[in-house]
Amino acid sequence: MLALAAEGAHRAAAQSRDLDTGADARAFARQDADYLDGVMATLAWTLGERAESPITRARSGELTTRDLKMQRVHAEDVIDQSRYPWIADRLPPLWYGEGVKFTITWLLGDWTAPPVDPAGRGPYGQDSELPAMLRDAETRQRHL
Image (cartoon, rainbow, N blue to C red; front, top):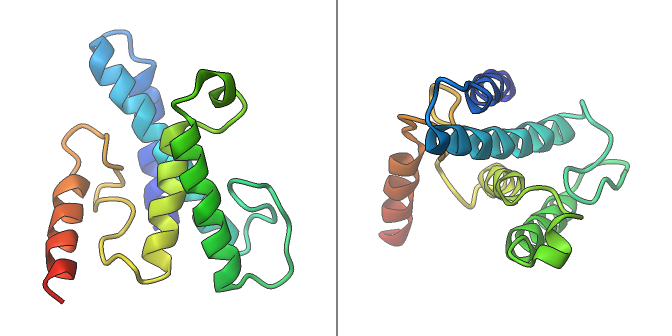
């Protein structure tokens, strides 16, 4: 999953800089790259490949579900506070926070859809299957 997200982030970052692509497509690609950066940071942290947590940059010994849940709360704060311009410049991008939040939610088993689609795209990637996968997962969870 980490390698898939890394490949998708690389592709999205390249598209976000492609001047032959329309402005809207570049913006969505940048959002997807930020989202995938959050996914990668979270996965690397949980796999022990990264010492610092993705949002607070805290270091902890053995990773616990409490640590995951605290990072998810901080990711939600990033998402909520990003709409305030006097705070937003000190925070990771909104989409990074979404990547962290959705990855942790998936890792904890609270969500059945993975944080990236089979092609390594996040929800903002062109032709991403993730929005449909998320809708299907939400529908299934409502009927449980």
